[in-house]
Image 1 (cartoon, helix red, strand yellow):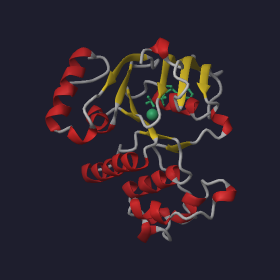
Image 2: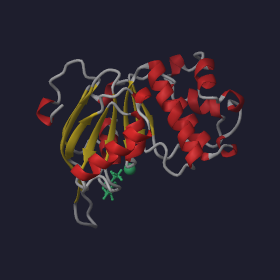
Image 3: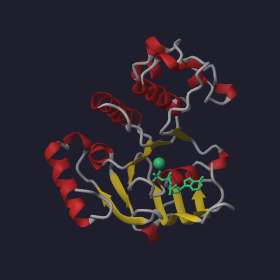
Length: 252
Ligand code: ADP
Ligand code: MG
C-alpha cells in the first residue's frame, strides 16, 4: 500500500496518518520525531515497522495508542474509544506486588475481569506461574506475562514494541515462536516494532521501513511467501536485498 492509499480501505483495523510529531520543551531544541508516516493495517495482517534506534518508532506507537495526542495527523478508529488494541511495551511494566494472574486480570475491563483465562495461560505456558510474583520471573517470562495481558481481552490488533530485545537467543526464539503461533491461532492483526530484520522476516506479511529520525516511510515491502515456508535461505537473501536497496535503514 502506498502512502496515498492509506485510509482508502474501510476494512482496515487501523489507519494512521502522522504528518508531523515534534517534541517541544522549554529547556531544549524541538525534536522532530515523525514526519509523513502513513499506513493502514488490514484484518489478520502482520506488519513490522523497522527502523534504526531513535528513529521515532515508540513515539509512533504511543500516538497509535492514544497516549500522545500532541501531533499533526489522524488515527482511525479513535484509540480513545476502546479500539481493541492490546499492547506489549518494551519494558514489561508488571506490578511487582501483584501475582502474574492479577497482573493479567487487572488489564481487563471490570465486567470481564473474572473471565476464564485457562486457555490463554496454558497456551503461553504460564499455568504454573499464575500465582507467582513478577520478581520471581526471568525477563523472557515477564514478557510472556505482558503478552498474556495484551491478549486477555481478545484484541483486534496486537502491538508489540521490540518484544525480543535484551533476551538471550533461546528466550527470544521461544517468545517469537509463541507470538507467531498466537497470531496463526487467533488471527488478529499485529503491528510489531523492531530494528531486527531477521526477526521481522520470520513473522511479517509486510515490512514498513522507516528512515532515521524523523521517522518517515522509506518503503513498503510485502512478503508473499507464507511464514511456514520461509527458511534461513529466504531470510538471508531477503535481508541482503533489502540492505542493498535501503542501506540507510538496514545495515549489512
Ligand atoms: P525509537 O523507538 O525509534 O528508538 P523514540 O520514538 O523513542 O525512538 O524516540 C525518537 C526521538 O524522540 C529520539 O530522538 C528521542 O530522544 C526523542 N524523544 C522521545 N521521547 C521524547 C520526549 N518525551 N521528549 C523529548 N524527546 C523525546
Ligand atoms: Mg523505541
